[in-house]
Length: 281
Image (cartoon, rainbow, N blue to C red):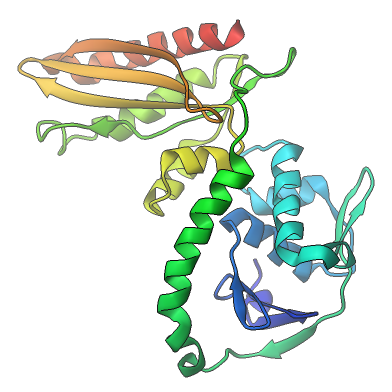
């Protein structure tokens, strides 16, 4: 997002969009949007009146990962729901090309005085949390889809391995094993992988794994735990269906603590092969 865009406040119809605060409001009332939907709106507003090709829009909204058009289509659908019955007057679909923001809008420098916003913040926070929970359940839940259509590959990510107990907390094992497992999975043709850096960014934001997986449009998610018990490190890995929450596959592995660094790549390779085989059926 350009510095020029962040210096503007956009108005169209009853709506006001502030790129710097990443907030959309209608007649002064906040409109809740997912982070990627906000990014999509910001790009369309910046290029208002121009057709933004689908490939370019996906690259700008998801700069560090590869997504399918269904993820972009979901963002556009979220925006249109948020903009209400006149959404088609704002966001135009250009067949086989992309999207165009068509509404006229005013640009206003600066921000509204903080004193005007502060009194409604506690109410907005409480109501927003309830609305967000209801919205996520309504918008994203769908039946099991962990096995993609014939000829397609499963879209997945590896969540950072969770450490249980104090013995491994000071080691770099969680991140090292997670990245090694992701690298091994990337070698298999049966899967398409979200980069570990993208997953870590969502984790830093405190977004739950299940919600992150749905926001990224995944089919399945790989999670795991590791704990040291005496001279052994026990690793538990599970593969879950994002849309139904159903456990697809799980396995436990043991590594001698003294051989942790040298043995982790072999375990990651075994896990990747088993997951790939499971998703190929």
